[in-house]
Amino acid sequence: MLNTLQTNASYLEQVKRERGDPQAQLEAMQGFLERSGLKVEDLDRLNIIHVTGTKGKGSACAFTERILRNYGLKTGFYSSPHLVQVRERIRINGQPISKDLFNKYFWLVYNRLEETKDPAHASMPAYFRFLTIMAFHVFLQEKVDLAVVEVGIGGTYDCTNIIRAPVVCGVSSLGIDHTSILGDTMEKIAWQKGGIFKPGVPAFTVAQPERPLEGLRGRGLGELKEMPPSTELLGGPVPLAPAFQLTDAMIQGLRDTEWLGRTQVLSHGPVTWYLDGAHTTSSIQACVRCFPQAALSQDKPHDGSEVRVLLFNATGDRDTAALLKLLVPCHFDYAVFCPNFTEVSVANNADQQNFNVTLENALTRCLENQRTWTRLLEEKVGQDPWLPSPLRVGGLLQPAPPRGSLLLVPAAPRPLNSPALVFPCLAQALRWVAQGRDPQLAAPTASGAHPHPAASSGAVLLREAAAARVLVTGSLHLVGGALRLLEPALSQ
Image (cartoon, rainbow, N blue to C red; front, side, top):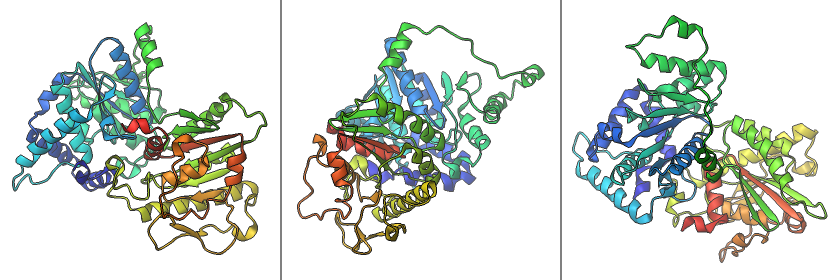
């Protein structure tokens, strides 16, 4: 039922359409909140810590929540997106709310919204808006001491910005992302992010480039219209919070924080999975720095035989070519591209369903990524060292008409040994990479399914290597799907 309220891709399109009247977005959100039985002033009781940013805002929220929990406070935490189960988005004391609690509050909010429909208010809130309203109900009725709330997209017109009296606001590192909504410059993005600042509420940020920092500062000053900034403040540096001594509770909180899918390492026998949901230029750059270090920290195989594999996908309006170019220096033996779907059909997995992205469209993008990767390798070395010249033309893999697992077939009966492969779903991609050496992926292919035409490509190398290092990156949704398959206990 929740999925009928649309998914994030549809929400993004809705935000784009409503950009011409942004105030209407917040007014609509306030209307939905009131129809659910809450008023905006009810949120003042939650002691909200409101956090935005481009990179690391979820991690900043996770660290903050864990530290405050160490002080004995009952915490609420609202974040997005979820990796494995939608319940992850709403947490109490660091744990996703139970299935029973989720069902209780889902139907409470859903039924109230249904009951209050009339000719003037006939719509239901979209997926993200609904979950935001539901989170507020959970936190109020479960009587948390405070709530850490992560912004969805931007800040100024994000549906979480109906919060009018947070106790503090935070802005993590800024970067270029969601340009069709937030703008295509750091200054425009900073203006959007700074929209969560409220009069009289302290706001903190990390080190930022000077021009975006000035944008944040201007937003802060601009909101205090009844208190014009002094000449002294405008002429001086941005005020800095005084240094303070870290307490034991803070240090322990930082150590104990677990935030899945970010620089996460899973060692499954000879196969080591490195999961990082990096999806912006700067976060991919950080990933490229961390991956070789993490690989070096693992036990080296005695015979030195090691295979490196990239598993990548990207969504939305991101510049995939720019992201892939940053990954070339990692010297992967194989690059694997697949949609974020765990299986070709996700009908039985409500947490992974996305009604707004078709398999055909997702595969088209994967094929484009495959061609881009091959081109980048050719540019790097003059020619692709893995492929004979007849196979160097991109786009040899074409979608096949029949439904099923055999979705990609070679255009000609030539040996298929490309270092860039496309699979129709995560399960098939992971199984090919693991080659039966990861116990979580040992399940046989579904009865009657055809083997992927690239299944023999590199299989011997992967099976015989003493170690396989696999980096999964480019999309948090991709990482979430991989986690669901690699760590089944997370789905319980």
